[in-house]
Image (cartoon, rainbow, N blue to C red; front, side, top):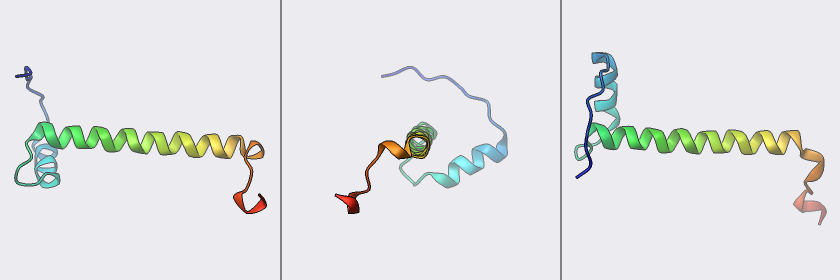
Length: 64
């Protein structure tokens, strides 16, 4: 079993985490899901930036 550590959060944050999870989720599962979602959003933002910054390097599929 992996070791666990306490994380101090405000009661409001704890309550928000509780609302995000489903019945079988513990706080660790909810936080892991938030991290995955954050990473997905960061990837999408970076991808959009690349497309915007390097637009001239891409070819429109309709032009092929």
